[in-house]
Length: 291
Image 1 (cartoon, rainbow, N blue to C red):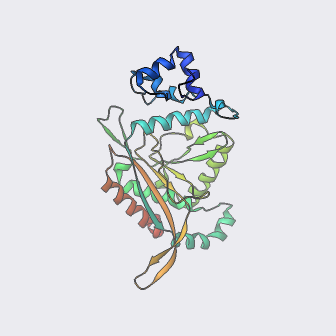
Image 2: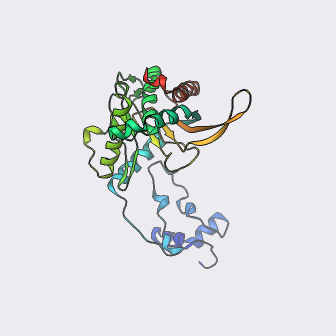
Image 3: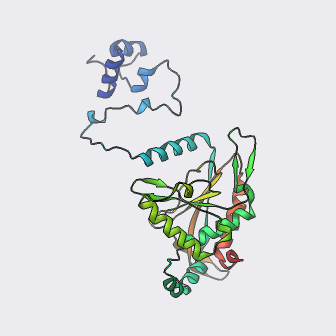
């Protein structure tokens, strides 16, 4: 077997399977053997087949292990299934948030008096709720057989929260009927209780659409995975100052990147572009959000 070139993990797997590497190399007409050569003749791996990950990493250097938490395992299974089953497309755009930042600054004294932190996310949640009323196809779910589209006459927004025990998505109910102060208060409350694993079962699930916000960390764009049975998800990254032409000169303007991933079985590219144009318009003129 010394004439056969194969990684230690491949040799170990060959011994486990009772495969003669010298004979296999002769049959293949070469001396280099890879892991996939041991599975020759088998059907291609399915989406749920993880046998090809069965690698002895310690053969290449020092390793350590730690268990994956229960919440993280559940999230991983859901995300893997969603990515495998949903034909997803991501539409990237950005919105001028100078008016929102000015509005938030004016409201700071009132926010302090109320004891509420009025974040930009509250405006995003309220604007998304209005957009979902304007574009009802985004507030739907496809039945498992793909034959019926369920339209929802309510607007619930899921807020993805990164916690030490895994990703959680608590839901703010009836956002279209709530004001900014109420929304901002609920965001802070749900995020805090999610960190402490105190979100109740009835506060999870049933969202019209979810928001995943990386603005506090960084990034310029990403492709969030649709959270079924929702048909779309909105991603937000860090606001940055960009030059914007006002007709006479370039002006420095705070622009927030927006990333809309959607289920292409329900939503097409034109739908997504119109939706994002409308949403960006609301964010650029927050007074329209309040109407």
